[in-house]
Amino acid sequence: MNNLENLKDYVDNNMKSIRITDNTKKNIHYKIRKNKHNRLKLAAVIILPIMILSLLAFNEQISYAAQKLFSYLPGTNKIFYNDGENKVYGLLGSVELSDKEKYIKVNTAYNEDKTVTLTMEGNVTIENEIERYITIVDEENNKAKLISSDIIINLDDYQWSARCTYEFRKVANNFNIIYDKFNIPVIMTELPEIPLENHNYISAQNINADIAVVTGYVENKLEVSILSQSSDEVKSISFPLKDIYLLDSKGNKFYSIDNNNENILYFDKKLENGIKLVIPHIFITDNDVRSNVNISKYDSLPVKFSLGDNELVINNAEWGEYNEKFNYRTTENNNYRMEEKAQKIKLAISKSLEGTNELKLQNISADANKNQLNEYMAEDVRVIWDDPYRDADSQISEEENIKIIISNIKNIQDKVDITFYAPVYSTCDKVIIPLRP
Amino acid sequence: MGRKILTEEHFNSLINEYGTEILRLCFLYLKDYQLAEDACQDTFLKVYKSFHSFNGLSTEKTWITKICINTCKNYLRNPWKRKVTLENKEFIQEAVSDKEIFAELEKSELFNSIMKLRKNYKEIILMYYYQQLSVNEISQILDISESNAFTRLSRARQLLKDELGGIIYE
Image (cartoon, rainbow over all chains, first blue to last red; front, side, top):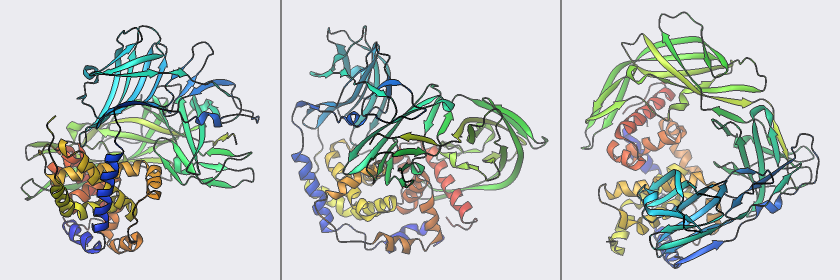
């Protein structure tokens, strides 16, 4: 098969054995019955916390560990520093209010000074205007002010989740969430302080970040949550989850059998004396720097430009013409084909960095000025060749160059304005974190 | 709240009409028969639970596909939970060999390349060419503008062309 239009026939012919059977139908009806049975009555349910923290205790010295107090609230992926004066309060567990099929659930809550941050989910009506429907009041009935909210609504089943920060007049450790005639009391408790003497924590000075590790067991698998916090808000930290491993005292490596996007890894290995978590490198993305560069066909190369603190060099710019073809089916099922002359430019950018041996530039993002890209009208829709998911176009080559291809530039352009942004760095050294058995 | 009623007869007709296609889409998405089975069952469970919210502005197929895609994405996002769920399965299906089916499908270089595409490109190719949905319907499913859906489809095809050295017919 080399024709996309034959894909359906090809797949169906090869998947004849995959079909809905009576057993599948039986399973679906079984799940429906089970679901009805499990429906909760009107109740506020407080689920007791999973005190993963109890697994954090420390008994072995390592040279680079910091003497710090911190608190951790499961579910927040956040480290709270504790200066001994201002205690951190959080909701240990979750609170749920449900009425027949409708519910609101508070998954996490914690305060920082006079603000309280909540993550909630539910399926009651909020219509993207959470303030209109949900009110937060302190114990004296003073209404808190919503200062930020981030809401995602899945319209399939009207399931929403929200992260909101409210500000009270004064520090509030207990408060009420009011929805319609319902009142959900939220009682936060002081988060236990964890003295991070020697294990499960490292302060990575080279990237100004703190990394803590929380461990626990789920279904006999070791669950390792990696928490990180950069002191620089515009920089985000990520980890190469598949490359992270446990190293036992005999030098054996154990890679995770599973991981999720929230920096939680699962290992088929138990904690033991001398075991360490090894993070081969850490990625840091600087979201606050950008640089505009004009590249002309007539420029002599190399062209230097700055991105943040880095001096980068465009060593090569290869222009090429091609026909951009676009074939689509209309809503009436007619096939429609468009073809337009276009250009693409392939850039090779030197990623050698001056001034640091600790961080290595791994990648950068680049966008061309939209006015210089092809666009057309299709079924009254203005289409421009710009895709927010285009990050696959940049590649790291073995020659220490970053290669970036920008395509669908208008054929008449003999120059293009490119914005470079979001450089991604990786640390050169391994980060090794001893884990408490 | 005026609820739309989903009769058992209508629900069964939805399973009969779209079930196999949804199951196969789940399989293409998840590449694992047992997971695909679970995802397909969860899709229809959600169809049953939220039929009252189906507003009729899209076709039933579009609406069910959207639920299916979101379910599969959740499965991919949370691999641990789905593994735990599997262990508690109430019914065990007869074995279907994932590997054999995929080995057969992957004899086609084009199919192979589709499967290697990044998730957002793969899904749009599958929806457009396998499910035969229009760009307008795909934009509803993915909650993106039609323009964006056009662009994404175009890029997916371009990537396939690049991968296959330009040999691709549309």
